[in-house]
Amino acid sequence: MAFALAACAGAVANTPKDEKGSGSADNFAGRVTTDAEKSKEEISKMKMKVQIGDAVFVATLEDNAAVSELVQMMKKSPVTINMSDYSGFEKVGSLGQNLTASDTKVTTIPGDIVLYNGNNIVMFYGSNSWSYTKIGHIDDLTGWEDALGDGSVTAVFTLAE
Image (cartoon, rainbow, N blue to C red; front, side, top):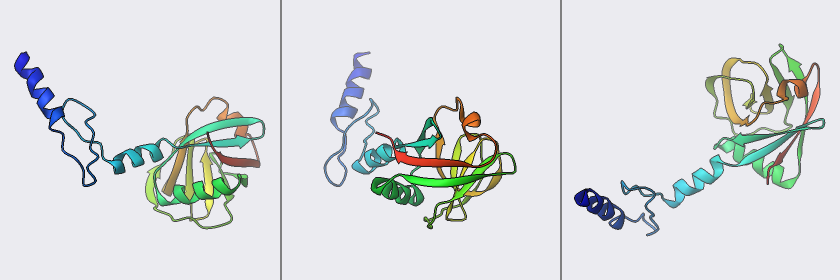
């Protein structure tokens, strides 16, 4: 047992540094978390509020160029989109400008928020398979379908604190 602990301690003590010399061990296997990984982890935990009427939902954002551009828009002011129902499983509305798309074939689930055709935001309360750029996903779907309701809605997107 003393040998196993000594081996683990040696792995942590001999943790290599990244090119900037800022490595840090985050487990006994001696794995190093680089600054780039920490930054990516922070981005992947970024949250956005989606307000529909009086209901407010929180979404975890993806890490891609479209999301970075949307975040810059939200930093300037809330992004308001008038959305209409499409085929009984999604709400779709024009963003008013193009974002950098990185479309891949996906099957959406309720709560997914995606970019379609470079300039449309789509929020799902059902499912669909198509090529989209993922924007994020609603963390808690309680009341989601009721908030989206029938017909058109106005969604306001802001950065969560």
